[in-house]
Image (cartoon, rainbow, N blue to C red; front, side, top):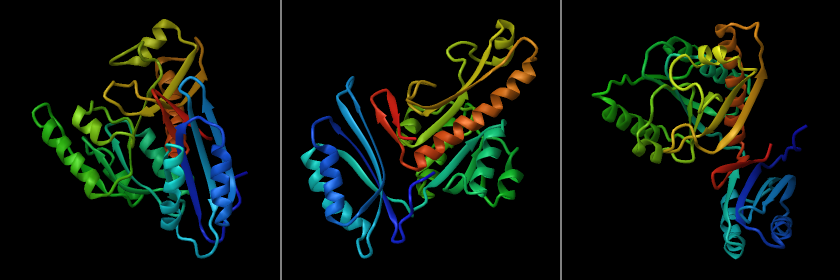
Length: 289
């Protein structure tokens, strides 16, 4: 069961700061003094990094503007050295999906968004191949074909970065986009791009990973959703999913299992990011599910 809804709108407060006594009391007191009703609150103190993390979902009283709350919170944030944000829960994030020729995650995301399981506005689907234009347009989502070759990769990524800015994109989802992004693009997308891949890595690299896994007799198939960083496939992990397999299953059947759990892990990671439940903690994440 989710938190109760407020008739006057809601905010989500997220913060990270050095761990010390009194943070929860200070935040709760700040909100209570302004008649802001806490609907859900989660916190975590990490002794390994000496950092404190908190997420509060709260209902606004009639007449209190989100901007005013943000401005007043800056004093408290400075006092505790917080990296903090106050998000208007009514504002839908804008999402751009990148895909190549494997469409299972794209199809899953489009369907979840349509039925309301993923609350966001899809600004478009970008692909280096034309395969999924009909699928995207069937959901009313613009499709942008940006083909790429070794000789056009720099220009193609410049167009991609410009498109992200022009469309005012908040989150980029690499739904099996089979192109390695250059350092300038990774930097441009920092903290707002999520990738999905099978979890065999660093084993079974390259082509036909499920054939390689079959030949080694794996007993678990996994998927990992993580933030994109300059270290290929090694960004902070948001979510992982696994499924048991056995000797009866063919490489194609293993790949089918992999597709299913990629969709599940990717959708969870996307939803948690959109709901401001994920916070970076050095090379890992704190996820308030």
